[in-house]
Length: 436
Ligand code: GDP
Ligand code: GDP
Image (cartoon, rainbow, N blue to C red):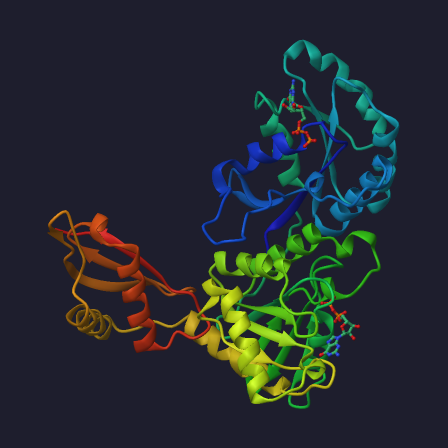
């Protein structure tokens, strides 16, 4: 089911990131060990009582050198477009400013549920001042203190109370859910359109619960697919659409609901830093991945060019060594027919279970070929392995002492499992656990 999305809007310094960090807690890993991937602190999962939701700090989306008022308006627009509920945060020590009034007008017009947080109310005496905020027209203002963690419970009760009551999204195990991610102009919308117009494809659109969340269902060779959030790919001509943080935000939202993520690269402009960042998010999320090199019509298309481009892709996306690379042109539809079969294969592998006895044969053969490492005179002993999860396939290897499982040996075992079972398109995970 799609999680509700909550956005925090407010002037600089009212305490947006303080509140964001409080609500998100330790869920955010600040630095990733994948080169080039640092998590932007603008979108993360938060939890209140039994509700899990995703939280956006619109203050983290920098929109160039615009004047404050323009930036504020754009942040409010993003919140209106992306969120189910908006937390409008004000500084309780400063009262309502002109910029606050501007934002209030925009939010009011949008008809989205808005919950007023009056921040920096660090002690009870200060609560007297909050009545003036009723004049904004969003009902009860909630006095809070981000730095002291006060009042957040009542604020969140109100937020959760506004979550849309949607019927559970019917998630069909047989259907493959996929999304397309990539920086602006790589050809995401063009590729969706091309797929929908492919001869052998039958299309039906499902209306989402909000105007913005429209998925598209298609069937090819008796396999059902859902393309996540095709509506989000339609251009609305807004200024912030081309900013990097915004494309990351969109990508994260789409990845979350996908089995398979298509990472698009533009053959014409080549690989950019931003491509790596976006791909890193899909990898981190443990989704199956297909790398799509689009605009292949702009390149002299032959086997050699493909090999060369693939070498570049492999060098830049080393952590995606499992992802197949598909070359195509959304414009001319050349090689388009190779895409859905690759998506299907990746999805099947992502959900694959392997028999325990065969898995153990593979592991034991691997050990016979390449003896386990030793550390300080002690040798790693592998007792047995078992698959504990799918999506992505995850394995536990029981050993005498997990400390002895060197990273490179883990990689070796992982590769042997890959070789044996052909997990093309999916990451796999391996954990060493102690067993005497
Ligand atoms: P943002 O620009 O809206 O993201 O605001 P920040 O979260 O960066 O906070 C701006 C400043 O206000 C920082 O110095 C925070 O420590 C401070 N601040 C945040 N919440 C509170 C609060 O509840 N009480 C007080 N006194 N200061 C706060
Ligand atoms: P998005 O921002 O990722 O959705 O990208 P669009 O689908 O809007 O495409 C951006 C631009 O690239 C448009 O001008 C498209 O016509 C062009 N484009 C998309 N796919 C191809 C392709 O396969 N070949 C060529 N030559 N141009 C393409």
